[in-house]
Image (cartoon, rainbow, N blue to C red; front, top):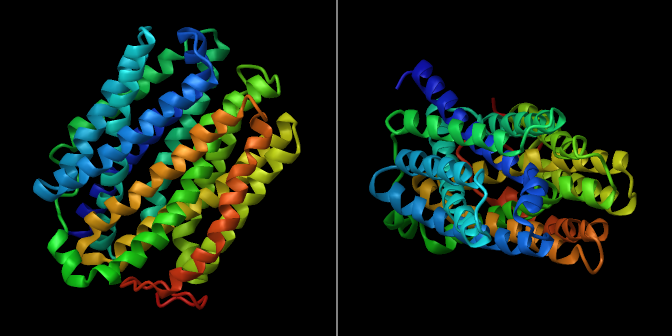
Length: 395
């Protein structure tokens, strides 16, 4: 495959990241509208998000099975089609049981796309021979910002939130149909290779990178799910302003991802991971200690800087440390995503009534502190790409 064709395929995979980001951001910023339409409270939302996390974990496992049999491009394309179907169905008022089933369909697609996007990203990164993972994730972030701003604009003109969700659904279906035959076709070797490399050799990769993903997605899920609700319900922010907290968060994520591919190879993964974790904690701590709209939006943005770097760093490290079995290792690492999403979305919602969302934002701070020692173990993972932990680059 030529450099140009590899680059074109990387852009197509980037469109897959964009489709996922657009859909997820449209859904979470529509939560206040969905709560009113369906006549549900935060507890019900938390229960539904729990089911979505479970469905997404199943979708991630399913994606690994599809990738093993036919290739991760089919796992990605089918996951995008499921996301599109779930989002489209969510725009229609239905009984709460049906609405929950719709979210489960979306969750399965989300999990499949989560896992297969990282599989595809590692494959195309290997073909290009340079770090591009952060820029691929940047496509997700740019689309999420666009969705938040779109939602704000839709509500500003008095239109229904379902309009923005429907646009996201159509885009996911379009990218899924185009990518069915044109996503990265390569496959890595499967389970036999993992055992050949040695289970004990691969296990540290899964646990170290997995826990970084767990914490990053705990922070991400807390901000993504509850930022708009916190601003609107707890701080009495205007409905058209509430989505801007999520937009500020995603803007910071985008900036950090646009520069991370240049900074990480020079500074080293371990110090960058430590700094990213600390930044996540500082941002969430600001939200928990200063109950004002300006402080909350600023805190969400600061947390976004850390999450933006940490997620692609962890997936890239996992894929490179077990290069001959990256699909399977990434699928296992991706499962930690849902544990973090569970705590970030569901636990914060469960605490919203007894202690309030402001205090509940201390949960990500505790998780960051607990994860800091693990980040130091990144330097012990083997990596075939020119990334060093001594602050120097081989490029």
